[in-house]
Image (cartoon, rainbow, N blue to C red; front, side):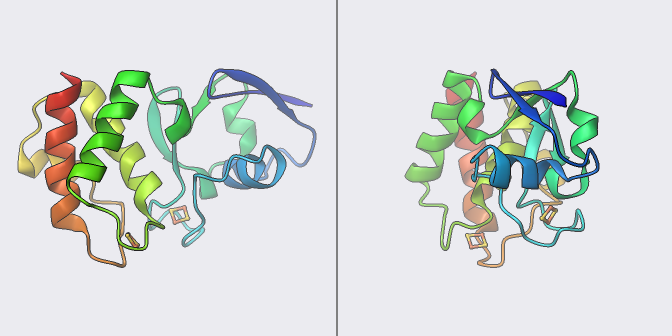
Length: 151
Ligand code: FES
Ligand code: FES
């Protein structure tokens, strides 16, 4: 039995420890904000934080999360989560929306360490998050806005 911490709450998983974190979250713990895109660590739709660092949950076994904190978009610190949500709304970022929680988790990881990121730093931090709808320019504006609001 693996003991987990998801968004500050204790959880457990008694299946195969090689099961990707994404499926433990979605299928066993009913946390469905991280999305399945590629399953190969190539698109970023499944991004969550493990002890505060962004990871691709589709390609990270749940055994790697033992004794660590898993955070999804629902569990971000309140000020940062609100800043991201407000910025995403203000810039009307989402189109289909499928990639957006992954985008927000990568943005959150950047903003936690850099409250005034340059456009180049934003592009570099968000590089692994694919958006099939092409919302990249709006994402860039929203990250800038969220960083200012959370400073
Ligand atoms: S679903 Fe994990 S990176 Fe694409
Ligand atoms: S908003 Fe549709 S994939 Fe990004």
